[in-house]
Image (cartoon, rainbow, N blue to C red; front, side, top):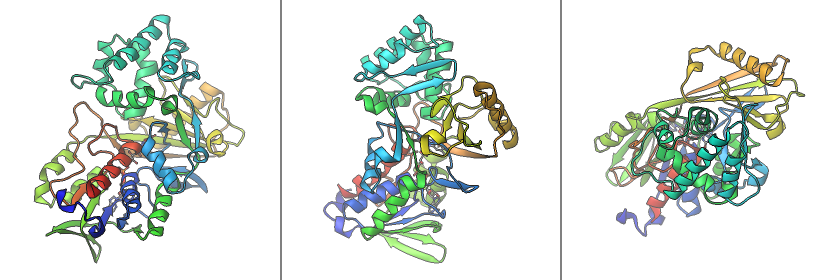
Length: 436
Ligand SMILES: Cc1cc2nc3c(=O)[nH]c(=O)nc-3n(C[C@H](O)[C@H](O)[C@H](O)COP(=O)(O)OP(=O)(O)OC[C@H]3O[C@@H](n4cnc5c(N)ncnc54)[C@H](O)[C@@H]3O)c2cc1C
């Protein structure tokens, strides 16, 4: 990008997509004094992490969780006026599969907190605890870097992690982190997440559960920040075409055309591929995007009477449809509201929403004795929630073959699986590329 060095004042950047990646790029460029215009096709900002209003109750399109090591997401939330201590319920690392398994990190420095947590985990035999602790030490010994990537199943087998240990610990962890079944998931990407969350400070492994919805948490505040500093954010304003023209790029929206020096395409992969496919120089990028397989995430919200509560704000179930349950009463004072999350592909996809809801109501009754009938339920099935994070995946770079057209999004090249932090980092990388 030598051609734009020292020319920051001449940049005029258009950003397609107001999800976490696009808004991160927009905020970072704004903070560097570069004018941006964001175009978002939906009526609200946030994309795959957005607030949803149902029956006068504020929900999200899916229950999300952040980790303490999501430094850039947390930094940007504060930059645009959020307060991480108030916006989240922060829980120290704990994994609880109701009645089957329980691991809780004690107040010790990392990584000792994890080793003690593994060695004292309830629901594992001594042999399993020692195998799990040895595995973590081995990963540390190799600096969480594999000589070659493989599936998580293969890595667990290599390190003698047997079936029970896998079912109770590694599989739930992998599905939660990568939204990909262990037989398909990249071991290296899982290790990247373990490296950043478990290996540095104790707070990195904290789990942060938002008290406000995901549009309000960052994208709406980001829009206010951008507009306060002279930028523009348009919602309900989808881009129909990206047309490179000499040194500039035209963005076409309905009857209107906007001209920019640079464009960051921060739409989700399927839309990005459609927008980029008419540009011959980007054929390779489009092919890479088209090769990405997608994985679903289902969230079932159940509104029970307000006195219903779960034993913990977040609790897992072993070998059930519900993988993780969140008590929104304890998290966000939405008493009686329970969110059940089912990540990645599985048998639940063969059920109707009504059938799935009935299964989960039965699970809540059998596991916690909740006899009440929910007043309502709402299933939100995000069928293309994230890319399938398989080994050696070729993800498109943020810099495309056209010097003034960049890509942001959780699916672009990076260490992380499809996460908020991955999306934010990709946006920051675009800002960096435009301003070095
Ligand atoms: C149900 C669910 C649960 C999840 N749970 C977690 C979790 O617990 N922790 C975590 O870290 N991550 C989680 N994720 C992943 C995380 O939400 C995503 O990685 C992240 O939101 C992706 O952001 P993005 O900006 O890359 O893409 P998107 O959010 O998809 O943003 C793209 C934006 O572009 C807009 N757009 C599309 N077409 C156009 C167009 N033509 N013109 C203009 N705009 C357009 C879209 O409307 C959208 O707003 C979850 C995802 C889902 C779906």
